[in-house]
Image 1 (cartoon, rainbow, N blue to C red):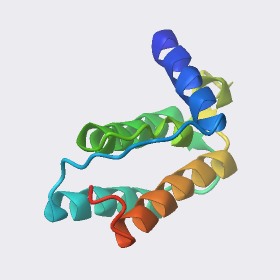
Image 2 (spheres, rainbow, N blue to C red):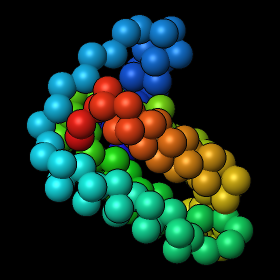
Image 3 (cartoon, helix red, strand yellow):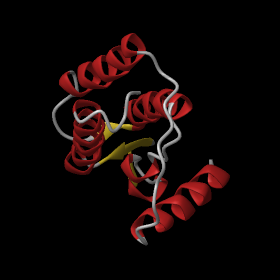
Image 4 (cartoon, rainbow, N blue to C red):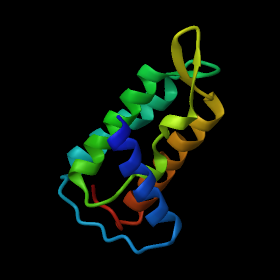
Length: 120
């Protein structure tokens, strides 16, 4: 987990510096619709309040699926390990932070899809 966290920090720094991103597509229209549908469904069934680490992991797996299909780094939309806090031996992410990252990913991917900049 530590290695992945360091990798994510590095990639987020690259994004923050405004480095250009090229997008190559490997998904069919059907695959694209399926990936967006999965992410949208996931966003609709979130519990109120803080989000358990298990849901954060599921969210990251959804992003992994999309990243495998496109040549795009989505680490900016991931929840950094340091944002998880522990309560009664269970790790949580602040619900507001989680929903902001998730909605950001959905908005970007949907907008890119609609403008045909990304046919993932």
